[in-house]
Every structure is written in C-alpha cells, then in structure tokens.
Length: 317
Ligand code: UD1
Image (tube, rainbow, N blue to C red; front, side, top):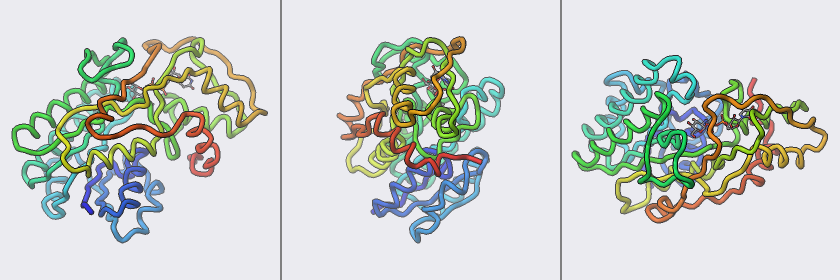
C-alpha cells in the first residue's frame, strides 16, 4: 500500500479522494488551508489511523516542501485550487497564486524530495468555448478564463518538470463533476448542487436559456477512483486525459430526472441564457481508458438518485 499526499483534502473532490484511498488501505496525508475546504467533509477520514491532516497554504513558498520532505509520500494528488471560474476573472492575481504558483511549488517539492508521481486536477476549461465534440486531448486548447489558462499552464509546468527530473505526471481533465459535499452556495456553483438544494427545499429551479445545453456530468465517486488509479497504478506514463463519461445530458433532462424523484416540485422557470455559456460540453473518455484503465461507472440518473438519498450530506448551512 502507498503513502499519498492530497492537497485540497477538505474540498469536494479532495475529501472523496481521501475517503477512497483510505478504503483501499493507503496511508493518506491531507493538506488544506480551509479557504473553501471544510473540516466536516473529512468527518469519516479523521477517524482513520492512516490519515493525518495538516493546515497549510500550498502557495506559500516552503510550506508544502517542508511537509513533503518529512513525509516522503509515494505520490502527490494536487487538488488545492481556486475553484471558481468567476473568481478567477474578478481576482486574476489570486488565480495566479493559487492555480499557477502553487503548482510550481508542488512540482518543486516533488523534484526536491524524489516523489515518484504527481496527479493534477486539470479541467475541461482548458479547451475553451468551442472544442470539437467530443473534446479530445490532442485537440485545440483555447481557454476563455484566467482559470482555464492557469490549468493549461499548470499542466505544462508539471509535465515539463516530470520529464526533466524523472517523475510521472498525470493531468486529469475533469468535466462537470457532481455529488455529495459540493457547495451549492454561490450562483456559480455546479448546476446539480444548486438543483439538488432547491428541489430538496421544495423550490423550483431556474434554467438559463432553453435548457437544451448539454454537459458531460461525472459523479465524484468516479473521479475519486480515477485519482486513486492515477496515483497508484503501476507502470503509468506521464500524460493528460479527460475524466468524463462520454455521455451528454441536457439541462431539461436534468430537471426531468429530478422531477421524477421529487414529483411535487414546481416546474422549472427559464431565464435568459448566461453570457459566455457554452452550448455543448462532451469529452472523449477513450484516452483515460487506454492509458489508465479508467471508465466512469455511474449513470447520471443513478448519481442523482444517490444524491437525493444522501440529502443530509448535501445540505450546507
Ligand atoms: C463547468 C465548471 C467550470 C469549467 C467548465 C468547463 C462547475 C461549477 N463549473 O462550468 O469550472 O470551466 O465546466 O466547461 O462545475 N445553469 C442553470 N441554472 C442554474 C445554474 C446553472 O441553468 O441554476 C446552467 C448554466 O447556465 C450552464 C449549465 O447549467 O448552461 C452548467 O453550469 P455549471 O454547472 O455552472 O457548469 P459550467 O458552466 O459547465
């Protein structure tokens, strides 16, 4: 069993990744500065003797390097980030610090202390507005936000460091991730987290535009498994791969599925489309399958049913 350091451990994807790794028997070192992560997300993990948690800012020079030097993990899964595309536009300097500078410090920590593998939280945002459908890894990358640009730059920083200094880098290009513990509190939160909260409260939802826009929604449990594979599977090569399902679901379909489970809900209202909203987002999952043996298992209808059933975990107060 391995020893894995996870940055952003108290976040949405981070905490599920920690839980998955612990269930597989690995030792896990969690790192978070609790800017957006929440200790409550780790309520299961903190009971494990194989888990330790460190409050630390990855973007502060020396902070992560010191811990990596002491712990000597086999792999680092770097998920700590400024996660809001909107915030990257209102605060590009913070985006640079948390989404570029921090990545460089992770790469340096890996180089300095001989970490064999780094797994990175990249994003479909690197493809930009109008990628080929489905988006393939070798296709055009034209990010339309500081967030997407920082993710693309981070991939290059890590892959360059890995190739130069001899460690493996896996860049995970997540599509639209959803599931328990996703924070629905901002209007720019993931649409499924917003819909789940509003439907559970008996309120209707707002669909921006005609609702025919589609997304490749992937369950966070599948993403956690993809992270564990990338960090621990033997004989992986460096590279970048979409972490997606290869299936698209429209907003109208989403509302219909929620309505099926919660039939007393009001019908959705429509509001004008958001500027900059893309019409279709769909990834090609073939490269992750070929390179890592990863295929998403959870169908959206099943993922939503599980989310509704776990509503106690979804509520954020
Ligand atoms: C998502 C990611 C973003 C990434 C992008 C890559 C999230 C929160 N954002 O953005 O980081 O850059 O994929 O393609 O995962 N909508 C409604 N009603 C609502 C909320 C949203 O109709 O109450 C619509 C939006 O207008 C959009 C769709 O739902 O058409 C999805 O929105 P959202 O969940 O915010 O994700 P993306 O915009 O795809």
